[in-house]
Every structure is written in C-alpha cells, then in structure tokens.
Length: 279
Image 1 (spheres, rainbow, N blue to C red):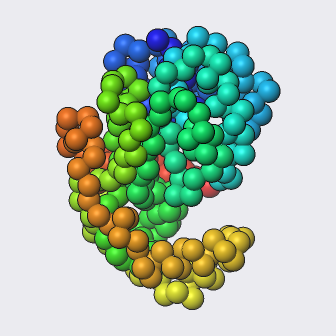
Image 2: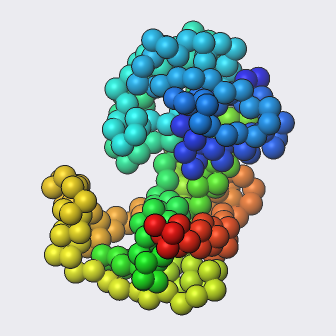
Image 3: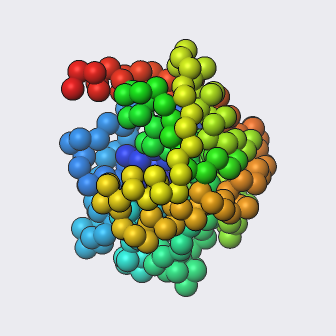
C-alpha cells in the first residue's frame, strides 16, 4: 500500500510522513520542490502542486491511501474535483483531509464522490507559539498577546497521529474528528510553561485592541483579517477552548501537553535568539 502525503513539508504533513515510516508503511511525499525537501530514509519524493492537477498524475500512480491538505499557501484550493478524480482513477481507498475552518472545493468534491474519507479539524496549533512569539522572545524576553482566553491548543503530531490511524485502520470512514490538546491554557500560562522549558522567565504583556490593530496594519494585513483576529481575541469560539478526547479515543494514548511541546521546541527558541543576535 502506497500512501500519498500532501502538504508533506508542513508541520502536520511532515509528522504524518514520519509516523507512517515508523509503522513501516510505504510513503510518497508530495512537494513543489523535492530538491529542498528532507524526509526519512525510504520515503519516495514526488514533485507536484495541488493547484496544478495537470502535473499530478504520476504522483497518484499506485496510491491506495492519501492525506490531503486543503490550502495552497494561505489560499483555499480550487482544484478539489480534479484532485478527487485523480484519486478515484488511481484506486485510492482511504482519504484523510485536514480542513481549515471553512470548507472548500476539496471537501465538496469528496462529498460528491464515492471515496471513503475522514475529515480532520484542529483547534489552535501549539506551533503558533513559535510563529507568533519567537521574535519578541529573542529580542526582549516578552510574549505579547491580545486576549488571554483559554485555548485547547493541539500538538501537530497528535493531528498527524489521528490521520495515521485513519489511513492505516478501519472504522474511520465518514467521521469528522475535531482534535484538541488535553488541556485549555491561556497565553499567559503557555508563556510561563515555555519559559520554564527554556530556563528563563518570560514577561507577558496583553495588547490593547488598538495596539493589535496597529501591529497587524504595520504587517500589511488585510482589514478583514485584522477584524477576524480582533473578534477571536475578544470572543474565543467555544470549540476553540473545549477539550475533547479525540486523540486518545482514536489512537489509544493521551494527547501531548503544551509542556511536552515546549520541552521539544525550547532549543528552537534559543537558536532563534542566537540568529537574531547574529543579525
């Protein structure tokens, strides 16, 4: 059985690849730039872009299961029908889809097909702490956040573990798995935990609404995205802070905690500080 993993260089996709390899599965990783990609030994690397289905046929040859990512960068894919047609023609028998909060052409095409598929939805990724905080931690030892509501942040490897279970086992077809971490933590609590993992105290500062708007505006963010961020900070959706037992129910083991993620990634934050100092 060859399993095709799209989005294979992303945090979730890479973990799907690694966990499948650890299980002894035959894996084909799809990437736009194979020369720049690094995967475990034994992984077949295929060149391809989900936004350009005309060039994808070779990547689907012999594939019997597939993990799909529904975004092209930050934009929703519009090629769902073509991708699903290729999968059906190849004889794919299992599909997992990591969906964004808004469904797009990929989910629509799968619903209209006869392919058995499993939908995965995650709350806030733990890795957002690195994306959002690494610069300010390196420069000032501070974490700045607008809104300090609890979030059931999820480890990317747990999303991957649920995908792997669905790709390699039975009984997951037609399921929609909302995946969370095992605890709901405020940003201030996560900053404290991360500081402990790094061996330093991190200062926490809560931004005002205007400070957030000014900050995002300076980054060139679109007004609609700024408004979305403001509303998210003011009123976190219930789904974002509700802990669910999905990871343990599907994989048989508890979800990874933020403390585990922080311990795994403390060196990334230290290295980021070294790089900033060098600049």
